[in-house]
Length: 211
Image (cartoon, rainbow, N blue to C red; front, side):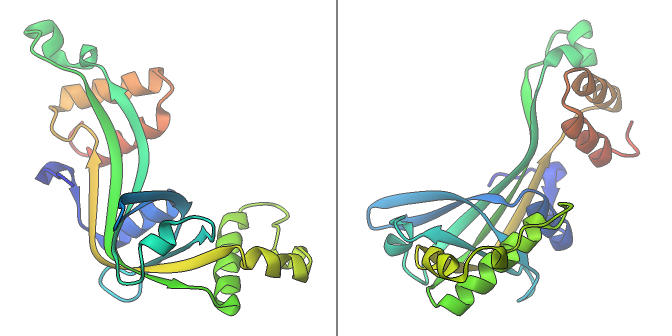
């Protein structure tokens, strides 16, 4: 991923927090038939250091796991808040007109090697962790154990689990850090007016002290 210095984020805890907040990944790997991509939620564990491990599962019917055998290098892409930035917000629009549109976004790329597993005990632990993670904020969380045991066994036979040991982790927060303070202020205000409060908040945070 192309990451100019002013957009770079290298702090591993920050990158892990981003993954936890935006867990739906695009998992891309090379196969004999070419590149293959799947979209699925992943869990991030901090071990082994320095970059940790991602885990998730694929449908057994998905050819991805058969084509991308264990040991295959893969890339998991996570994306966060994003929005169009109009040049009408920039001071130079009135002064010189020498401005162009852009797009603000945040992304994390995790590279590593895949290991697939199919044993029932490991799959049950994985789906239980995924469920507990995403049900945690609900007033009455659903649990895997709420479903009949034989039904759960059947569902487990329909998936294949995997771990991706992360060997490289990149973060990019393209949030107007290359603009002068007056432009940053206008971008935040403009995004708020356009209903893009999430992106406005990230722009403000990433440029704190420059506004």
